[in-house]
Image (cartoon, rainbow, N blue to C red; front, top):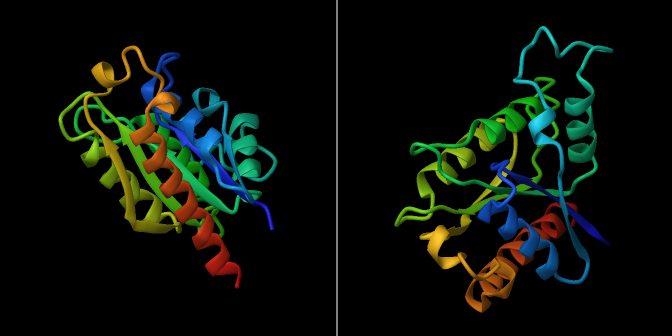
Length: 186
């Protein structure tokens, strides 16, 4: 069985170290798992129930929901903005939490990781993301964590995929997600 893991990156910046971390996750996925990096979070309007009506869902939000419905698990990459989750990632979680009771997360395994410039690697934001996605229906893997501090200096001249310590840790995260999908299916 091939497991499809949808990666959502909470940074829109072209040189984002979280995006680079997601790119590394694509490369280290174990056999039988595919990490797909979702493109297009910037185009999704802020969640608004007036927009979320049958036949009227914005195309960008519909594209996200379609990609999420086809996923077996989720891997969220969260930087930390002012001590919390970036709006773009929270907005994606909000769109995927609907329709109420039938959102795309629907008990699927979710891991939240990331990197940030500060000394704790964005743990506050990642904790907030875990909380939000858990409320939205995801099966949050609370013990699967990866917070990499000092992102701007650590990755100034090295892509995360070229950092042996990071790729080993990221490989473990993806493998744990993969394994949890198997447990839910069995």
